Image 1 (tube, rainbow, N blue to C red):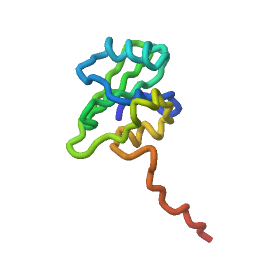
Image 2 (tube, rainbow, N blue to C red):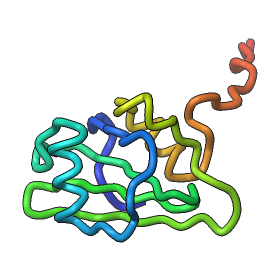
Image 3 (spheres, rainbow, N blue to C red):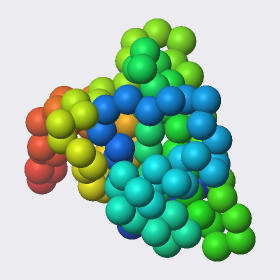
Image 4 (cartoon, one colour):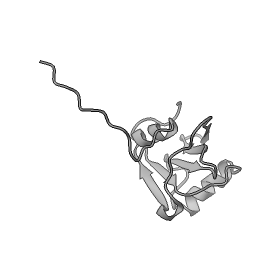
Amino acid sequence: MIGPGTGVRVYLACGVTDMRKGIAGLSAMAQVVLRQKPTGGVVFAFRGRRGDRVKLLYWDGQGFCLYYKLLERGRFPWPSAEDGALHLTSAQLAMLWEGIDWRRPAWGAPPARVG
């Protein structure tokens, strides 16, 4: 994915978001619902009702970038609306974007020592 690098702060809007919203509507949600400055260099993640669509809103210093992904099969893992907003790491955002359950990743065995 072309976009923000590692170490960027990520806020996930829990619950359902109207996917008809564009940059103006999502930035207003970031400010009112998530209580964050939309132009602060933070990534905001929103998911639609069916769970197969996600939008990421990001201010790159010159303007807003809006990323949109629709899964052919499956749903994006998402917390319920009661959770409010969550803070994710950039690694969790990468897993989310790939459709991997970032809440319970299947970690493999630790690397074996060669010697």
